[in-house]
Image (cartoon, rainbow, N blue to C red; front, side, top):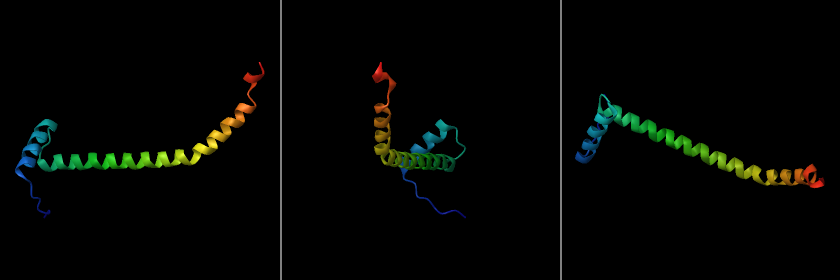
Length: 78
């Protein structure tokens, strides 16, 4: 058997509204969808943090390489 969940009256109204709006068959389905959405948001935030960290790590080297290419630019010699 599942674990008991105490739902406040206001939350019950919100669940019922979402159940009708989403076309869900039960309040549990609404809660599962909400948990899935939260989980996806957390995964997205974690990936963005990793991308930001990776970009910070390579930014200095990228600037150096760009400066090196500018030294040998053929456009300067026209």
